[in-house]
Length: 399
Image (cartoon, rainbow, N blue to C red):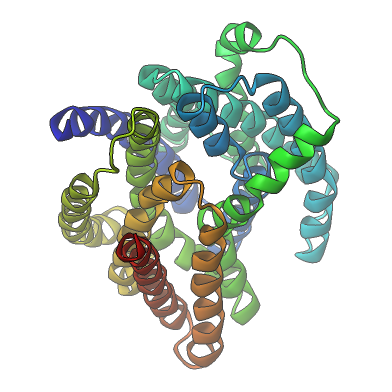
């Protein structure tokens, strides 16, 4: 069973890392050509789009997949109605955030909304394909947008194309709409959309703890970038964002693991089999080994590729990579709470992590600047993993 899981995880991880590689190529091209201040604006906009788009997920994907498989429920009608409702919620939030950070511009707003639409479809496709364990299509819904960004990256690096930060954000945002090439798969699933009723409300209520946890964890880059802006400048955001983007490779690895383990362990629950903790421990050790390799490789890469422009990013890279690796372990262990119907406990873990981070940032950022933010990330990640393991073991002991 472990071998099969590792094969599937490796397959999905390979696809996600390839997609991330093309995405990083785009980030690198934009970072290399834009002024540091403009790259900071781009990075902040991109991170805001990702975290606000996550509201469209808000934990509903995992509840949909786990409920459909383990309980054999037909949740399609409710699921698609909830997705539409959550998308509408993102519109006023987007306006408020862009206004707060002085990024209120008609072009930016338009691009931002188009990006939300694209991500809304992308997350919906992901849930459908995860439920069906169609891992090839899970990879492809991100590969096609990544190819668009990869092509533009080559044009930029070959000096055949020059973009300002608004245009760069436009490519990042609108490229995700390319996932609509799989619209026929969506039409097969959609029979009827229910946007009202007690079942929809209960579905959203059930997703709230997991949704808040998802927003905080998947939106951690936006939180950290915001702190970098508040305590510094857009240039500081650019410096921090590059190191953060590299460390986020582990969020993709975590997503790959979670993608495979959730339906697998939901099926085990359905068949009255115990959760496979041994598998999680082995995968965690592999993640740590990858972290060490990543630090060594990218410290050299940043210095050579950017020719000293992002030397300050190297100083915080190791802290952020270890933080991301630890977060990755916690993130894929979330499937346990979905399967055991204990999603309310995810909120406790999130509160511990966010509370710890805010306290540490207040104490360290004024003096250590970006290093303080990175160090706060690492300690908060360790805290979240400790709380996660405690909750799992404590319940096991009680039984």
